[in-house]
Length: 416
Image (tube, rainbow, N blue to C red):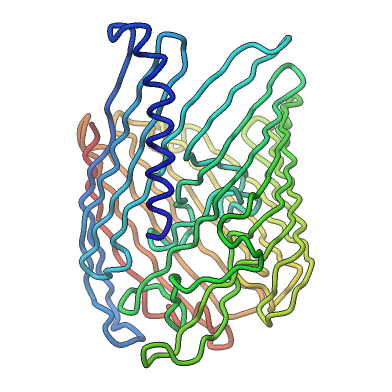
């Protein structure tokens, strides 16, 4: 990938930073750990793809090791590379440096400070259906259409915390471009996205320095966070490029944006009430026009404990996603209702089943997902997943292009 050299240099610098002081203290003062997972995965698509070259089966593997090194003074270095091989889509086979950061910390007045330098992943948000305010890291879209997986982001991340809460400041010196399925990949847009030809509004292109900040605090049953971001957006506008190599493609264009976000969760016994909201300026809507807009996802979760006289818990979730741009939104959450049920058996194997439906209020779109997870032993875990497009409205070209891409997936993880 284009940024691979950058990430390798960041990892090298961070490793040297911790290795030098550690060497002075003596090798015996170092602590280290090695862990991670290896996964075998397979997907089966029951329907023939909507585009030529799309396969009915895809299999591959994932390697996600993690190295941890701690010096005598308490500073540490974490390295977490990631590699996926996929036999069905060459563009889904990729490597990334998820984490490679030096961690330093200490006391500051009546509180603490913490500094992370290097490549890291940061999560903001409380909602289940969509992490609306989460913007620091770029989405690794080839991993899964749920947008949960994130690429590693070069950053300097300073946290100051105390009884008054926690304040976080971010300097983000390099922009990661979003990954996209290839021409023969499933769950892709109507036209192939040529990520290698990405353009930027900023003259500095991917090297523009972005900035972000977040303040969070717990106030009794309320956990609240407010955030701000100024820099190159993570979600690009896809521009038609005409003919490229004999095929019509879309080219990502990344604008400079400003975003203010709010996330809040209230815990009331068996209830969890959740809200994420943002206001964003500088981004283009689906028609290619720059538009300042607001969006939110609001809902809650209620848990029934010890259902049917067993040790199992049943959680019922409901959320409403709304985007002020309406049908000109650049995502599928412009006006969607999310309903889900989570059954946790609370057994030794950690068995859990989650079923969810996402229903679009503007279009006749209905999507069903079912996930099953269970440990087979101390090292092995089984994952099953099903995705079905119950309805797909041809007036929504983005989702309609994936109408035949429902799948059954099997994953077998080995943890070490």
